[in-house]
Structure formats: structure tokens, C-alpha cells
Length: 594
Ligand code: SAT
Ligand code: MN
Image 1 (tube, rainbow, N blue to C red):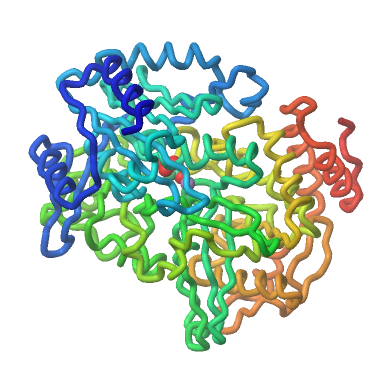
Image 2: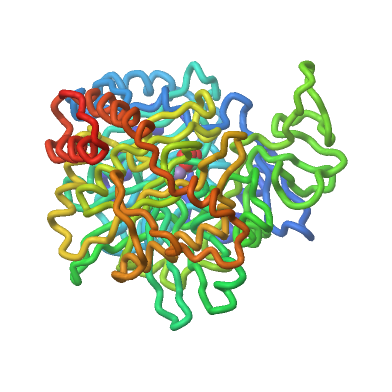
């Protein structure tokens, strides 16, 4: 027995005051027992067994449907170590504030102890956490999203290192909700929310915020990235990682189905992960990636057999649906899903719903919340890579950064070199989505899609990326992509989804030293004819708009880069300022004085 673990569980139980403490072993029998309890209490609803075998439905509190970044803190001793993009409080205050909400909050409840591994158990990349929670929904979700139970405890042994993760629902009152990270103590406390990214502590809290802190110390990268493999007709597979903000299509890209003409030739995409990548330098001098998760927590609305047939196949059994529409026949539905809406059902708030329902202001009432989700095991995905659990990971040829920009950023742009790529990543901006509380559509800087997830000062994070570049003998190439450019009428210029494969194809050609490119002020863009658009109806005019670099827009953008960097005081590496000045020069503008 791990004495420190036992002592910590006792201490937390004394704080939270549950009626009982139950250690979870991860067995099938245990799963069935917990599900039966959650169904009996109404926390989960069983879906129609014939059509969705083993699937469950969960409705969250109406005020608890997305990550609450304004209630999320990084508690380092020095404020500067958290940096200007994180909410900060001193560790003592974090423990005191969260502790006051936790105190006695589990009375009448059970505290579950969940040992979990991020990464295949025993992989040199893996990190172990132990989550305590009073939520059966969270316990059952952790069972899908992580490797958990006895095997992890065995691995931990009598003295292994682990991240202490305390989670409690308390009264789910947004006024009494806080998610505090203590990277210097390897601990996370989250109280007052049952929502995914706030409550499944292995995911954003451990695998990104705490892990990014560890990664800097230990010389690797913890990133908000999908990982996919592209197999060519000769059977050779090359791997790509891509960082995109939440709800910008990472799951769809990770599970992409290539256009018919490519499939006929023998191209195929393999999914390694859809949200998080841990990257290390391998013995061969390349960058290698693992997906530390075991499942997908994907956005449901918009997922249909056109946008993502692989996701649909993945969630046909043993999945948990959260805040979708619950149809009268015991199935689920969401806007942008397959088939017509069911004639009757309960919306994500639990209110009676029918197609065409309008609210008092005459606006359509959504059946599913825009951030409603499915949780399903990765191994159920038809295109899961045979190497997705490889303890060594997969070697990476290209790194993509992207966001949702209706103007400015072209479809694809290759960085001149690693440092320029870090600049591209550091200056990514994206329109806000429903995955986080805030004004949807507002453009914000989201460097490397890590703005809400970097557990330390982002100035130091950029320096760490630059340092990694110096240490990787054979670095991947870096690209910026934007699937979301629109025309003057607000219509998307690029069809996206499976057609994105055409862009991946050019990217991989570039990585092999092929594929034509032209140099522009912002980077290398596909030269005329270099993107294979056969079979796609896309006019020359639209293609030109997709690959257009408008000088005056970029000059304006430069000021945005500077304003963002200025927030960090002196902590932005000189190399990024040098990149900034070089971009200004290429645009024929003067970089604003620092
Ligand atoms: O809720 S999560 O943070 O896990 C999903 C997301 O926002 O990326
Ligand atoms: Mn994410």
C-alpha cells in the first residue's frame, strides 16, 4: 500500500465528510454496479438498448455546460510564474477558498477514489493521477477517458509519484465553483462543476496545465493537439499533430475520411488522438507523440455521417451523451446530426421539445446545447490507429496550428523554419466558440490553442518551444491552417471536413521536399496548381481568395501581435520580437517600437 496516497485520501475525506470512501478497481462488474446506482438516482438515464447498447444520457445543471475559464486559476508562489494569461492566486489562498467550499460538501455522498494513468500504463510517457470525486457521472466518464483502476495502483507501487486530484460537485452553484491548479505541489482542486473540462481532471487540468509545467522542467511538450496518421497507397504512414482551439474541428480532422478519389488510390487516415498530445524527442532525433487519453469527449452538434462518420460509428455503444436532446424513443439527437429531428423529446434543459419550437422572442429553441458532448472509448473508433497505444508514440512529420478566422489567415501557410513556426503558433487568433463561457465569435489570441491550458507563464512557454527547436535534430515542419475563411456574404470559402485531406496531402509533400510553394511575407503558400483539387468544384476566384495575403490586413494584424506580446512585459523571448520585426519588414511596414 502507498502510505502517502492512503494518508492523502484520509485527509481529503476528513475535509469533505463523505459517508463512505470507495476505491474503484476498473472492473466490468464495478461499472455495472455504478451505472445501476446512477440510473436509480436519476443522475444517468439508460438509452434504448437495441439502438444504443450500453449508452447513457446525462443532463448537467443548466449553469454548468462549458469550461469556466474565469473561475480557473494557476496557483504558483510567484504571480509572474502563472503569467498574464492565467488567473492567479497564491497557493494558500487557493487551498483556503476551495477548501471552504469542499468542507463537509460530500455529506450523504460517497467519495470515489480513481487511480488513473494518462498514457498507456507503463509507457515512459505516462503520468499517474488519483482523482477523488463524489460524482458517478465523473467516475464513469473517467473510466472511458483514462486507463483507471487496479492496474494503475499496481504500477504506482508503494511510493510512486502521482498528481493529487480532488473533485467535488458541492451544490453546483456557479458562485461556489473554482478550479485551482497547484503545479508546484502537483495537485488540482476543482469544486462546484460537473462539466467535462472542469471535472474530468485527467484531461485539461492534468494532461495540459500540470503536464505543461512538468514538460518544461523535463524537456518535452504537453500540447492541445490531435494526432493523425496519413497512409499512402504504398502503405507508408506519416503522422501529423494539430493544435486548434476547442470546438474548431479537432475531432473531425483527427477522424477525417479522404475524398473519394484519394480513397480509390489507397489513401487512409488513422486517428491516434483528438485533443491532447505529449511530445518527446526520440532516439532517432525526431519528435514523437502519444495521446495520453483513452477516449473522446467530442462536440455532438454538427456531427453527422457526412462531417464525421467515424465519430458516429464510435458512439453507437457504451457512450455517454451529455446535454443532447433526449428523444421519446430513448435515443439522442442534436442539431446538425443525422436524420430529421424526432417528433418529441426533452431538450438539454429537460423541457418538452418538438421541431420548430420557438421561445418567447420567436427564436428557435435548441434541442441540444451547442456544447453538448459524447464520451466514447477510442478503441471503438473504426479508424483508430494500430499504433495509438504504442508506448513509444508515433514520429511526427508536421505540426499544424490553426484557428477560426473568417478573414486574414489563408487556407495553409508553411513556416520558413522552426522559429518562424513558433511565431506563427504564438500569434494564432481564433473566434470564440461555445466550448467556453464568453461572447461567441469574438476574436482572441489563442497561442498554440493553449491560452486556457498553459500551466505557466506563456512567455516562458514560447521560450521552451524555441529551446525544443534547438534540441530536436530532425524537427517536424510547422504550418498554419484556416478552414474557416468566409466570403463577403458570410459563406465559408472552403468545404472543409474530408476535403481538408487535400491540404494535408500538400503539407506532407512539403515535408518530403516535394510540393510547390511560393514565398509570401507571411510564409510559404501552395503555388498555383500545387493543391490537388481534382473532383472539387472550386472556382479559380475562390481559390485565390483562400490563398490571398492582403497586405493592409496583415499590417493591422501586426499591431495585434505586438499588443499581445506587450502584455508579457519582458518575458517574450527576443527571438519572437526578431520574428515580429522580420515580418514587418517583409510586409514593408515598420514594426511598432517595443
Ligand atoms: O471540456 S473540455 O475542455 O474537455 C473540451 C474542450 O473545451 O476542449
Ligand atoms: Mn480540447
